[in-house]
Length: 158
Image 1 (cartoon, rainbow, N blue to C red):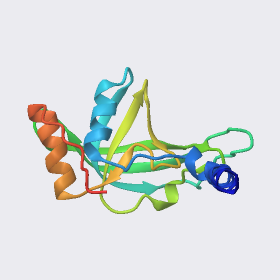
Image 2: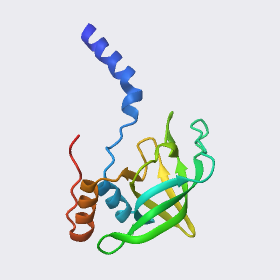
Image 3: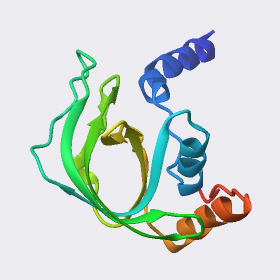
């Protein structure tokens, strides 16, 4: 009986950790989700510069945070990144329970899926990262192979 009670105690104490199961960020997964979505997205490579105050989401009310920023870089065109992209965006930070996304950690070169909604461009930032991944040569090569040839290989080096 003790092993069962200990197992149940462990399972119930670990439930907050299990409640938020995030997939590892991956450029190909990001590309496929944007491609297969009913929404329109730009796939871009570049940097984010926060231009307004950072607005934190409120997990108690379920209210997202909205932070103004500028994304400068290159747009994915028919075969490669290359078309200039320099646009204002709205970073929308959301929460899953007490875990929240935050635009403060968006540094360095990124690959991002920026949602196009009428005249507004937005980038999701959630507790699992959101619609962006860190740029790397490997991530870019796999994303381009998926885009050009349909060879969509998600990294499995966990």
